[in-house]
Length: 56
Image 1 (cartoon, helix red, strand yellow):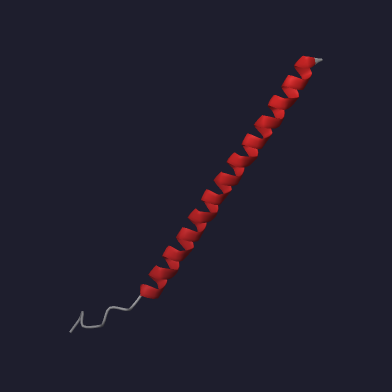
Image 2 (cartoon, rainbow, N blue to C red):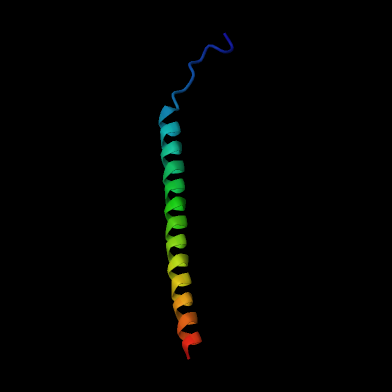
């Protein structure tokens, strides 16, 4: 009689948790990609400035 209550259905919370987790991970990966792209662009700009400085 003690443990005869039904187990609550929490599948909606599980789906919501996984959805939020994957969204956060996706945003993080997108942020890493954008940072990498900007870093590469900055590196190219510095290399161009360095070669221009050496020509003078």
